[in-house]
Image (tube, rainbow, N blue to C red; front, side, top):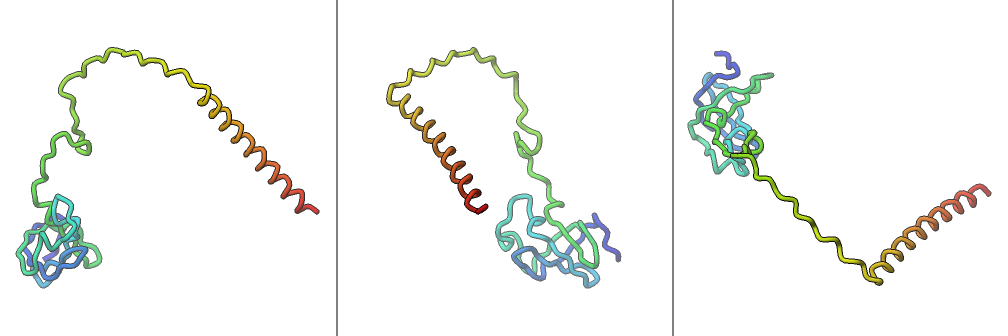
Length: 145
């Protein structure tokens, strides 16, 4: 029996690892269900969803180089999520009401201390940039000698 992609099979969980579960299939074949293919929800611990010896229904999602990739979640109905941004949700029920433009009050005038602080910051910044350019120029001149 050739396992084709899309084939639905019955199997039994043989081994569970941190990354997935190995399933015994008909004709002494083994396939693997990756942890991301166990359930439609996020699975942090696969052992909370599957147990060794459990009978499962799986679908073949890949069969390359003798490696059979299986899925359990693709046989389950996807949960309906209302207003999901990924599913193209967030449909507005009606046009939003127009907002009236509310004028914002002008900012309070700056005090003398605030003006001085701004001027001091500007001076220090300009001074630092001039000093760094002088230092860089001095370094290049001293290397030439």
